[in-house]
Image (cartoon, rainbow, N blue to C red):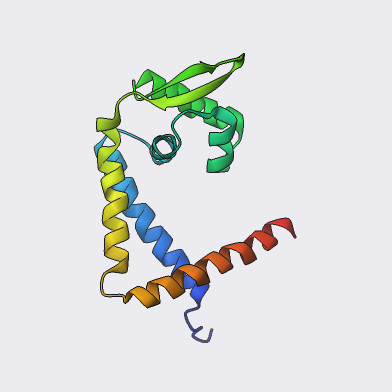
Length: 143
């Protein structure tokens, strides 16, 4: 088999796998699973979001979200509160932000490490290119 050149697709996969591996190591240190940690950071960025909004943001099914929330509530990290005017729907909030601080710091550390040594104008261009690639990839999901 001939050597294939490394493509942008390959580079992006390698980058995301490397970031995820680092995140998973941090997550384990605070007694969480990757899925629960993702949910916690999403709640942290969207306090008071409904369960449906969180499921959509994470691109998971509502029953999966419910199981993750049940576990986080058992751990004392999140709580559901009835939404005013509709007792069937719940808003979700963090209860113990100190447990997720290492996860949030990791995000900041990754952001800083990824841009180290890259000129601001290159970062601006990369951001525009990646945003366009995301829009293009969305078309693949609908195909």
